Length: 220
Image (tube, rainbow, N blue to C red; front, side, top):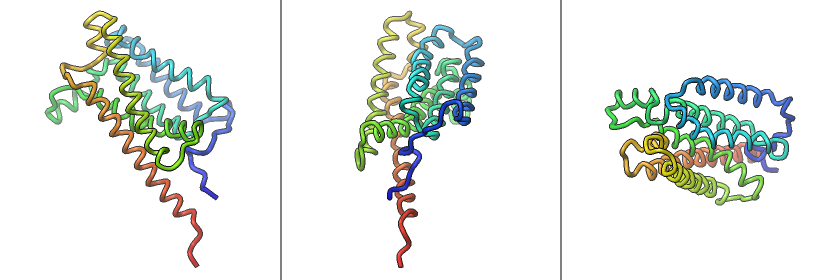
């Protein structure tokens, strides 16, 4: 019998009995509300939060019919927290990015790179869970499709950002894109997102193989 893993196990807890999810939701709401107070650029904050709030609503609405594993919810919460920080300061003005710029002599604030890397690192696992349980993929495709999906989503969001930037006033569009004068910013963002996804998928594969070996009976 195949061992049950976090990604293949269906979470059957009712929301009112799911204490971990209560804690994660409470954490995100408190952080979001706190960071919604006096953001650096209110208009940019609003644009950044449209998709974030949409994702939260999707997770809430689909919980009864398609609950994710606890680990997926933890990963999603970590990424959403980083996004909330970026939305508060605008990604090009997050203090952590300026500290990194000063410490390591970088040419620009790289917090947006951290966020895009985290997008792949933390969302590849929930995406793999979606492919496993809804599409029923196995083997090579169970590891390839999450990485490909992160690349596709990264490109999709870059396209959305470019169109939004064209529709709003120039200074708001520049703040929303956060390119900081780098003409290859979109490509670099997509690259680090795929790198993050590859790390997660490789770790998932390694742990899966390790778990399979431990589940085998000892040789006589």
